[in-house]
Length: 300
Image (tube, helix red, strand yellow):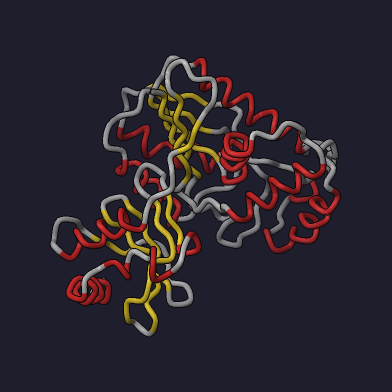
C-alpha cells in the first residue's frame, strides 16, 4: 500500500498579511515555524521519502521533519504553488492588494490564459499535478511525506476525487469552487492511498464525529495532553492534542461546539459536514466530560 501524506507549508508572511517580493521566497512567520515543528512530531514513524517544493516556505516547513529523520532521503520536486499572476507586477504587494487581479483572472475561465511572463496557465498547473501523481505511482518509496502548497494540494485532491475528463472553462470553475470550499489550513493536508496493482489513487475518508469525540474524551481522562495552538478568532480557539489540531468554539468562554479537526495523518472533520446535534463531537460527550473538558480549555 502506497501512503502519501500531503502537507501544506506553515503560515507564511504573506498568509499573515505581509507584502512579498516574489512567489518563491516568502518566509515563514514564527507561527509557521511552530507549525512546522508540530508537523514533524506528528509522524509516528519515519517516512521512506520526504519531498518538498522549491519555494522557501515549503522547504523551511520540511526541514523540521528532515531534521527529525536525518537518515531519510530528501528531494525537491516541481510541486510549487500555482503562480497564475505575472510575478513582476506582484512584487512587493499583499494578498489584499492582489485581490482584484485574482478575481479578474478567475472570471475569465480560460484554462490556457497566461497573465504574463513567468505566469502559469491553469492547464500547465493541472499538468504538473498529474505528473506528480504519475511520479508517485512509479516511485519505489511506499510511505512518502510531501510538503507543498494549498492550491497544488487541492489540484491533486480534485484530480483524485473528480477525475475530470476535459479541462475546459467549466472544469476550471469547478476546481476553483472545490479549492475555496476545501481550504487547506497551514500545516494540514490530505492522505493519498494506492494499493498494489490498482490503477487509481484514493483518499483517506473523512474523520467521523465519534473519532474526534474520542480524542476529546481521552483529554478529560488524562490520557492525552492538550495545548493551545494558533490564535483565537471570533470565539474560536485552536488546540493541539498529541498532533490532532482541533478548532473549538467557546461562546463567552463556555464550551459550545467543534468547528474543525485535522488528525496527525491529515484526515479531516468539519462542523459543516453534518447536523450539529447529530454529529458534533462535543455533543457526544457525557455531561461530566463536557464540564471537565470545558474547565481544561479555560486553563489554557
